[in-house]
Amino acid sequence: MTDPILTLSGITKSFPGVRALNDVSLELYAGEVTALIGENGAGKSTLVKTMTGIYQPDAGEIRMAGGQITLPTAHSAAQMGITAIHQETVLFDELSVAENIYLGHTPTNRFGMIDWKTMRREAQLTLDSMASGIDASMPLKELGIAKKHLVAVARALSVDAQVVIMDEPTAALSQKEIEELYVLIELLKEDGKAILFISHKFDEIYRIADRYTVFRDGEMVGKGFIKDTPQSEIVRLMVGRSVDQIFPAREAQIGETVLEVKGLTHPTEFEDVSFSVRKGEILGFYGLIGAGRSEVMQAVFGMTRPSGGTMVLGGKTVAPRSPADAVEAGIVYVPEERGKQGVITGEPIFKNVSLPSLGKTSRSGFLRMAEEYRLARTYTERLDLRAHSLSQNVSTLSGGNQQKVVIAKWLATLPKVIILDEPTKGIDIGSKAAVHEFMGELVAQGLSVIMVSSELPEVLGMSDRIVVMREGLVIDTLDNKSLAPETLVRLAAGIVEEAA
Image 1 (spheres, rainbow, N blue to C red):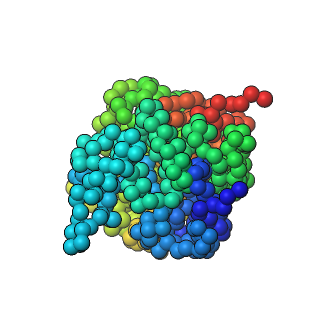
Image 2: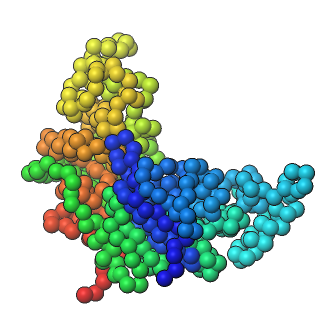
Image 3: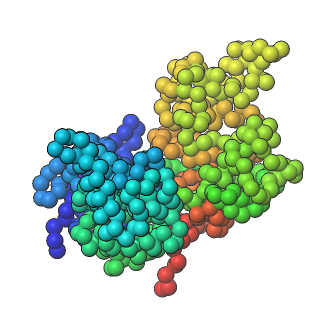
């Protein structure tokens, strides 16, 4: 066995309240593809940012060509021959293809000026070696997504990269374009490149990968050769964790249907999505990145306009044209990106909570601060918000307490349906438990909850029924009775169950 080109060992990286990586290791070999596999939040992106100089590890070492290296910047990683091709290509539409390929390392003449002729010639030679069919002199904006990916690969080749990281490279490609990417990967292998391939699609992993490494909860839990490992074993590694948090026991008292969605369609995000949620029910939505779950919820909340489908709320047809319409109808949405979409960070807690309910806290067109405080206190106390006072700026709160402010804000509107999109993302275990307990209280009071979550324990621990989505489609809706986590992963990833 040859030695790896790149070795990471003992890598640990923590952020406030969260250990993203804990003593992980990874080896990449010349002429081979290693698949990095794990659920959303397993630590894959943090590792990639560590490998490319964006993050600095708290502990551990990185070795390349037998010697220990440090990567203090993204530029230093590129100089060492490590490059990443992301799902969304980081290129510049207004520049030419050649300029994009050589950006940051343009060839110069003896006067220190850019040698345009050499740059275009070398760029064209690289593109031709890939059989790309791209003219190096054309503006990048004239290319489609697949061709832009080829330019990103050409950029990696132009710096003589030894390690090429591909992060969900096929997410926006057609099947024909994916096949072309497979051919390109084979060319990179033949050229001796070590490739790290990150994908949720098992058909892709088993098509092109030689080795695999599985991450779970920020730890490396398994590795090996793809040809020797059945898909069922990799699924077991992905989900075979102990549930590290207690979900509140509750007796579901489920009533009549409150919201029924039929055939909801968006031209680019999802198609023919149908589901219903009942009084006193938590309906979970599970899927991998790109499944379309959040996009469906944003359409239900009136943030985007679907091109087809109907929604019936409380027996009446509704078609929210804006979030204000949805709130008036009785639908509220707690977004995943609470810092950008959920709170106004320059304002105090009480103003954030009272914002959607100003009609309740004003008289004759004038706001009554005492009423704003009363409303905010009522709902933040129910959520056990930890803050010095309700006048505290919401930006100074922890992630978990910011989440409580967003939930309190919408509960004050007395909704019929509350949509929680990744309700415990990035918050500590104690705050997670508080949110879960309160979700149980909400449905006990007859509210209907839709919960979008990428965390399997959360989906299985909190949901009465689970809707599984993949690539903009509803794959199945399952009663959560003795449901195995492997079942959800197989449906979400499109894995065909193997014969015994």
